[in-house]
Length: 208
Length: 208
DNA sequence: AAAATTTTTAATCATTTGATTAAAAATTTT
DNA sequence: AAAATTTTTAATCAAATGATTAAAAATTTT
Image 1 (cartoon, each protein chain N blue to C red):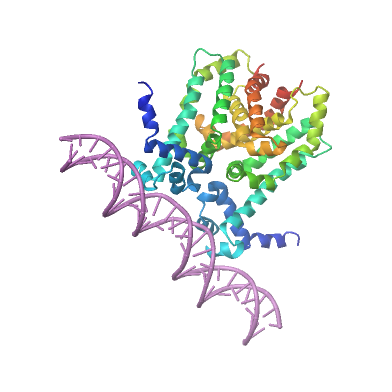
Image 2 (image 1 turned 120 degrees about the vertical axis):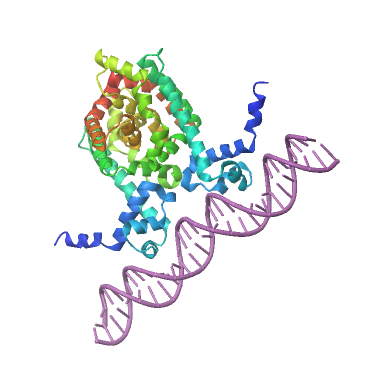
């Protein structure tokens, strides 16, 4: 009884279109994807896209909104957890995001392209200022600075470094793989290693 | 006598088109730029693009090739310098690339988008394998590992971390700026700080 | 200066592509 | 089962866009 309703919804043509749109938009970005690509990917008639979503732009907006809220939502939860220490937050971010991006490897570049194409719209959609400044993380960071446990006073450096270490390798994955003839398996292994190493590196960089 | 020839060439309509194409392609990527955008940016008749460069695709290819060779060429030179130590190489990379990207801030995302759209073509064009594996840098790194001066045996982690720390903040610049209401000036100041801090961070992360 | 060549322009073409429409098919309601 | 509603389809439209063409303008060669 519990799953049947949602199962039915997942096979809806509306759902099919969204899934296909996600696949194609992630891979090619807004401008390079044609509505016909999405229809074909979904195995549906082209007119259904407009029937269910009005326009390519509207469909894209929905995919983007869901993607962003999924990506940044988890971040907010982690940064705002009163029960975890700063160190634990770093561990959780590295672990969760590496796992997440491993499953959906196109998301980082998709988001970064969208940042380029529409920075203002993006900032409206992502209340980064609030998420960062009002977070438990910031309080803990400032405390750690005051207690001289951390040498770097600027939390932006801390966050840039952490996220850079996590996300950057995925963005340049083809270069990494090409540089040493790695298979996908080996690349994933590298990223799994990083789940453990990133928190250690962050400690080494910032701990007094 | 020395500069006059090249000065003349720079005001050629062919040059004007390339400069305009660079501007527009960097900002919007291949699919989202219309040849009319480039013509307008250059203040020239649309047909001239095809007269001088045959097609949008050919023009793009030229811009891409020049961009890549500029970006990776400097890297090769730095990594292959027999006279500099590993530490010095890190300092040089951080300094040069932060200055370079500060002047041309759209280049990283341009390259990353191109990696996504055409990874195979890219790897043909960028002989990363040779640049990395046959470099003086790799020799020095392996030596340092053997001498136990460095704890991490995998040079890929070293390079990913270094380049991530340098490049990632520029890619997410609008988010960074939005997160604390920074002006461009302040963002640049942050990046200037990083020129000094990144080599120190790298040392802390990897030095035994 | 005349002729030849190169460059530039305005107009137009052909294709691609997002979107619409009207009819057909499937489903739901009565 | 008939009627009404919703969903799907094939055909088509209209605008955008990369490219071409033929003539005009500018430049170079003779």
